[in-house]
Amino acid sequence: MDTPTAKHIFVMGVTADGRAFRPSDWAERLAGVMSSFRPGGPIPGDHLSYSPWCVPNTINGIKCVVVDRELREHEVMAWDFVMNFARDNGLQVGEACVLPDRP
Image 1 (spheres, one colour):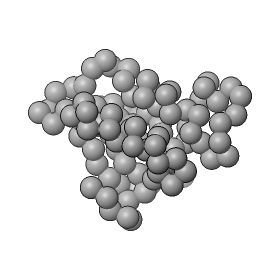
Image 2 (spheres, helix red, strand yellow; image 1 turned 90 degrees about the vertical axis):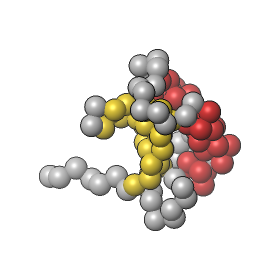
Image 3 (cartoon, one colour; image 1 turned 180 degrees about the vertical axis):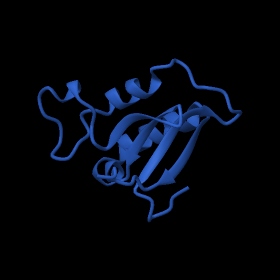
Image 4 (cartoon, helix red, strand yellow; image 1 turned 60 degrees about the vertical axis):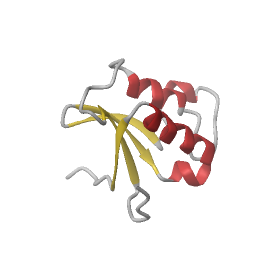
Protein backbone atom coordinates (compact mmCIF):
# COMPACT_ATOMS: atom_id res chain seq x y z
CA MET A 1 0.00 0.00 0.00
CA ASP A 2 2.11 2.86 -1.25
CA THR A 3 0.52 4.41 -4.32
CA PRO A 4 2.44 7.61 -5.09
CA THR A 5 -0.61 9.31 -6.65
CA ALA A 6 -2.78 8.89 -3.54
CA LYS A 7 -2.49 12.02 -1.41
CA HIS A 8 -4.21 10.71 1.70
CA ILE A 9 -4.23 7.57 3.82
CA PHE A 10 -7.43 6.65 5.63
CA VAL A 11 -7.00 4.75 8.90
CA MET A 12 -10.47 3.35 9.50
CA GLY A 13 -11.97 2.36 12.83
CA VAL A 14 -12.77 -1.12 11.59
CA THR A 15 -10.55 -4.09 12.35
CA ALA A 16 -9.52 -6.64 9.74
CA ASP A 17 -12.29 -8.96 11.00
CA GLY A 18 -14.95 -6.23 10.61
CA ARG A 19 -15.40 -5.16 14.25
CA ALA A 20 -15.62 -1.51 15.32
CA PHE A 21 -12.42 -0.34 17.00
CA ARG A 22 -12.68 0.84 20.60
CA PRO A 23 -12.56 3.18 22.43
CA SER A 24 -15.04 5.24 20.45
CA ASP A 25 -12.85 8.37 20.62
CA TRP A 26 -9.73 6.66 19.26
CA ALA A 27 -9.62 8.91 16.15
CA GLU A 28 -9.67 12.11 18.18
CA ARG A 29 -7.01 10.74 20.52
CA LEU A 30 -4.69 9.72 17.68
CA ALA A 31 -5.14 13.04 15.88
CA GLY A 32 -4.56 14.87 19.17
CA VAL A 33 -1.22 13.12 19.65
CA MET A 34 -0.25 14.24 16.14
CA SER A 35 -1.37 17.87 16.61
CA SER A 36 2.14 19.34 16.83
CA PHE A 37 3.14 17.93 13.44
CA ARG A 38 2.05 20.67 11.08
CA PRO A 39 3.34 22.95 8.34
CA GLY A 40 5.84 25.37 9.86
CA GLY A 41 6.42 23.13 12.88
CA PRO A 42 4.88 23.22 16.34
CA ILE A 43 3.70 26.50 17.82
CA PRO A 44 2.41 27.36 21.30
CA GLY A 45 -1.23 26.35 21.68
CA ASP A 46 -1.28 23.94 18.73
CA HIS A 47 -2.41 21.17 21.07
CA LEU A 48 -5.81 22.90 20.92
CA SER A 49 -6.32 22.11 17.22
CA TYR A 50 -5.66 19.19 14.91
CA SER A 51 -2.80 19.15 12.44
CA PRO A 52 -3.99 19.58 8.84
CA TRP A 53 -1.93 16.45 8.11
CA CYS A 54 -3.82 14.19 10.54
CA VAL A 55 -7.53 14.87 10.96
CA PRO A 56 -10.26 12.74 12.57
CA ASN A 57 -13.40 12.30 10.50
CA THR A 58 -16.44 10.07 10.05
CA ILE A 59 -17.03 8.60 6.61
CA ASN A 60 -20.12 6.51 5.92
CA GLY A 61 -20.65 6.19 9.66
CA ILE A 62 -17.13 4.86 10.29
CA LYS A 63 -14.66 6.78 12.44
CA CYS A 64 -11.37 7.34 10.66
CA VAL A 65 -8.25 9.47 10.62
CA VAL A 66 -7.28 11.09 7.34
CA VAL A 67 -3.50 11.32 7.09
CA ASP A 68 -1.91 13.54 4.44
CA ARG A 69 1.25 12.20 2.79
CA GLU A 70 2.95 15.51 3.57
CA LEU A 71 3.28 14.25 7.14
CA ARG A 72 5.61 11.55 5.85
CA GLU A 73 7.72 14.10 3.97
CA HIS A 74 7.89 16.39 7.01
CA GLU A 75 8.45 13.86 9.80
CA VAL A 76 8.87 10.20 8.91
CA MET A 77 8.81 9.08 12.56
CA ALA A 78 5.36 10.64 13.04
CA TRP A 79 4.18 8.91 9.86
CA ASP A 80 5.56 5.60 11.12
CA PHE A 81 3.80 6.10 14.46
CA VAL A 82 0.40 6.42 12.74
CA MET A 83 1.02 3.50 10.37
CA ASN A 84 2.29 1.30 13.22
CA PHE A 85 -0.77 2.25 15.31
CA ALA A 86 -2.99 1.03 12.48
CA ARG A 87 -0.99 -2.17 11.98
CA ASP A 88 -0.66 -2.98 15.69
CA ASN A 89 -4.42 -2.60 16.19
CA GLY A 90 -5.40 -4.47 13.03
CA LEU A 91 -7.16 -1.45 11.51
CA GLN A 92 -8.13 -1.24 7.87
CA VAL A 93 -6.13 1.31 5.88
CA GLY A 94 -6.93 2.73 2.46
CA GLU A 95 -5.50 5.30 0.09
CA ALA A 96 -7.32 8.04 -1.82
CA CYS A 97 -7.39 11.67 -2.71
CA VAL A 98 -9.77 13.89 -0.77
CA LEU A 99 -11.97 15.88 -3.16
CA PRO A 100 -12.92 19.44 -2.28
CA ASP A 101 -16.51 20.14 -1.25
CA ARG A 102 -18.84 21.30 -4.01
CA PRO A 103 -19.65 25.02 -3.96
